[in-house]
Length: 456
Image (cartoon, rainbow, N blue to C red):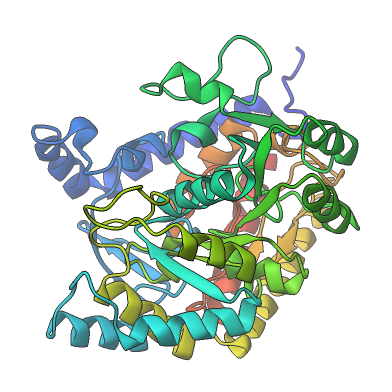
C-alpha cells in the first residue's frame, strides 16, 4: 500500500489522526468558551465582535478572561503562552507596567480633546531621533495610516496608482486589497469597488528588473512595501535590493512608503533605521505593541512640508489633503506612545528580545536537524518561523509553498492543548518584550514533542 507523504516529509494520515485527536481534546478543555460562544452568536455575526476573531481559526474561538506578561487565560481556566503577540498588537505583553500606569493616569484626566498635548511632542521627538524621519502624525490604525500615506504620495507626485509586492498586507483599504493575480479578478475581498483593482499593481518581491519596468511607466505615486515580507512567513530582501530599489523609486519621481506595522518590532528604530532604508514615509502600527488602537507615521522633511502647505481647514476652500479623524492623536494614544518609547521600547529591550529570538531559532533548527528534516527556521529580531523547505524563499510564492494549512492548523491546536497560543497561520512564533528565557524553553519542548508525534 502506498503512503501519502506531504512534500516536507510528514505522512498525511498521521497528521490527520493527530488533528482529530487534538480537536477532541480542545473541545473537552474549552466547554465554558463554547457555552459563551453559543450565547455570542445570538448578538454578533459568528459570535465575535470583529470578524477576524472567527476567520483566523479553524476551530471555535476561545473566550479570554485575562492576561499577565506573556500569558493569557480563558474562561475555562486554561493558561496560554502567547507566541503570536496578538499579531504584534501585544508585543509588550499584557500588562506592561509603565504603559498600564500611563493609561490609568490618562483615563483619570481625560482621554480625548481634539487638541494636541506635550506627550505628542515627546513621542514624536523620540520617534524622529531613532528613525531619522523628522515629522510625525498619529492615526487610528495602520490601515488608516497607510491610507493617509497614499493620499500624501498622490498629492506630492501628481500621480494616482500604487505599486506593491505579492505577499504583502497593508490594511483593509480598497487599493491595497488588489488581487495578486494578473487575471480577471481585480480585488481579493468582497464589498470593494471594482475600480480599486485598477488603482494598484503587484509584482514579485526581490524582482528589481520588473520594479524598474513598472516605474518606467510613470504611473505610480508610490511603492508601499514592508522592508521584508512578514505575512507569508518571512522573506528577506536580497543583498543590496533596497539600495537599488530606493534609487529606482527616487529616480522615477515616486515615493517609498515603508510599512513597518510588523517590522518595527524587529529592530530599534525599525528596519528603516537598522537597514538604512531612507523612506519618504514610515508606518508604525499595532499601537506600538501596547494593545491600544493607534498608529503613527513619519515623513521626511520635504514630505512634511507638502502636508503643511495643504492643510484641510474647517469650512474653508479649497480643501487640503484629506488627513485625520476625530479621535486620531487623542491623549490616550499619545500618552501610551510616550510611555512605550521611553520605558519599554529602548535599545536594550530590542537587544534582549533578539537574544531570545536567536535561542528560539537555534532550538527549532536543532529539532529539525535532529529528526532529519530538511526545514529552516528563519529569524529576525524576536520573530522566527517554521519553513518546511531547505531553500530560503525570495518571493511570496516561494514562502507560501512551505505553509501547508494542514500542518499549521494541526500544530496550532496541538500547542493550544499544551498551553501555547499560535494564532496567525501565515506567521511564525515570536518573542515578545515580555518573554523570559524559560518560556522559550517551554515552547521548544512542546515543539519537539509535536514533531516527534508527527513522525510517529
